[in-house]
Amino acid sequence: MGGTFQPLKGGGAAIALDEIEISILRSLAVQLLELIGPGEPEPAEDADPLAALFASDGPTEPPADPALARLFPDAYGGPGGPGPEEDAEELRARSAEFRRFTENDLRTRKREDVLAVVHSLNRLTPAGDGAAVLELSGELPLRWLGALNDLRLTIAARLDITEDDESAVLFRLPDDDPRKPMVMAYLWLGGLQETLIETL
Image 1 (cartoon, helix red, strand yellow):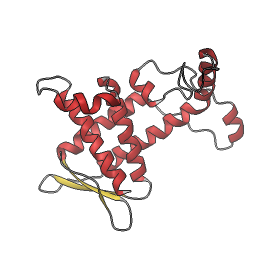
Image 2: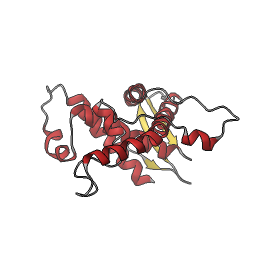
Image 3: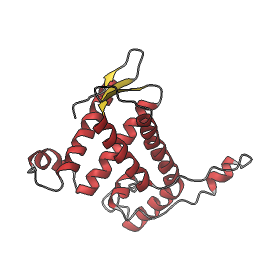
């Protein structure tokens, strides 16, 4: 998988993707959509936005799934976070309150980012050589950047990868290791993310 993002004249980014790459990206994106879950219902047209904000009833507990916990981490860390004078109970209460008012919006934004990836891929038509050029402009490069980051966080959680592991372990896995395909996807997504950042 050698395609990298290149800058477009006038702004934006482009990348050539073959059918296999398109299929892998679409599959990973759809799985991430399923993990994130359905979006919030749209408020009624006559709804008071200020009242809706203060009536927010999002979750207060961190997700049990390790991948979702990486996508929606506690705002105030945990014990040992902001300072020694704050006890664990206070940090949990502050994190719960912050989560209640923000997680639903964050979940919606992440879902919109991944949907933008899926829609972009669905519009691609590979040519005779099996490759298609994806061009991203406007808000799409940032949506792709957010989705690529979330895909990598999810895979890292599934593989139990920390930043310290990345260089030391990932490149030395034997070919028969069952984690190898997901590690290869993780590294490939990292390359896509890095070249997309460079083009922007």
